[in-house]
Amino acid sequence: MSEQRLFRSIYNIENITVEYIMRNISVKAVNNVSINIRNREALGIVGESGSGKTTLALSLLNLVPSPGKITSGKLIFDGKIDVLSLSDEELRAFRWKQVAMVFQGALNSFNPVLRIGDQMLETIMEHEKVSKQEALERISRLLKLVRLEPNRTMKAFPHELSGGMKQRAMIATALLLNPRVLILDEPTTALDVISQKYILSILSDLKKKLEISMVLLTHDLAICTELVDRIAVMYAGRIVEVAKMEDLFLKPRHPYTMGLLRAVPSVVGDVRKLEPIPGAPPDMFNLPSGCPFHPRCPYAVERCKREEPYLEEASEDHFVACHRWREV
Ligand SMILES: Nc1ncnc2c1ncn2[C@@H]1O[C@H](COP(=O)(O)OP(=O)(O)O)[C@@H](O)[C@H]1O
Ligand code: SF4
Ligand SMILES: [Mg+2]
Image (tube, rainbow, N blue to C red; front, side):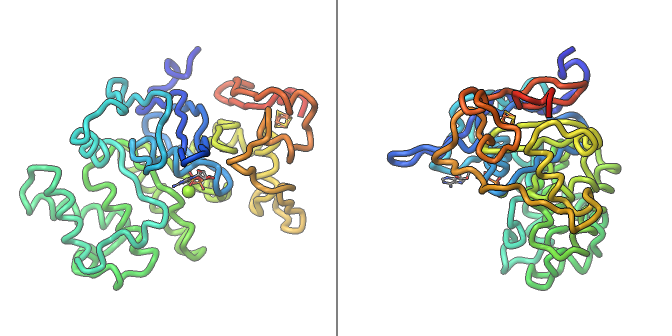
């Protein structure tokens, strides 16, 4: 049975390829990626830096910056909106109201000379015809939801908030127009461990209280355990494994996922057994032939150098792109 029929999806991503095209060279940062974001799920997208997470997320908003370009594929939102054919005006509304994103390094995306409350108010008033009173009530409700004191936060200038508080205000801002999907790109990376934990517990709270799907992009598999229902693992612009979180942790099927898990302290238990994945991340301008993981893979055989593996269903709701998943 197709995934479509088993689970209602809010966003269908079909065979998306994104290329950065420079004068005499181009790089496929996202290569033929298909995945559905399901209603009310939290989906983790995990991969080393450079694996294409941010580019994929930007493509979901049709916001890939030049020289990047979506060169193939389809994006269907809510079963009917063909995102790649929206006009500029329709896209502007789509980006806040349907899919909102907290950008990587968002801590500095507030305007430093405006109070947080004014910036949030402007965002609502620009997009919706509501009274100021109604808008202020919404802002206050969302700030409380991210555990910030509404009055004080609204009066504050960005520099008056700590990194963790700014990130929470950023999340509240992304939620201002009640989006159906919230994308968070490395939301905890710049924060200390305690603020990280706090943000994750707020996000898991939001997921319970709001009817929303979340997409969490991170290089850190351990972050996912706190929040996500499913994980997609990216390598060299491809999704190489997708499964429910528990399934991926207990029965990983792709050698790269296995390597990632061996490098996570909370999974390994004993820090002395931590093993980094051998070899360097791939050179995106000069990818290996066949399976792009083959130079680092302990299971690689001749076929892996010649033929690229594609995602296949290894067990229910568990997909893997590896020629040797049955044996490894
Ligand atoms: N503005 C850009 N110009 C050219 N290449 C880029 C640009 N941004 C990203 N890339 C390429 O796309 C690849 C994926 O980058 P990115 O999506 O930022 O990955 P991640 O978020 O997983 O770190 C990078 O390895 C890089 O080669
Ligand atoms: S296809 Fe081959 S090289 Fe790639 S992950 Fe599987 S075994 Fe390793
Ligand atoms: Mg990134």
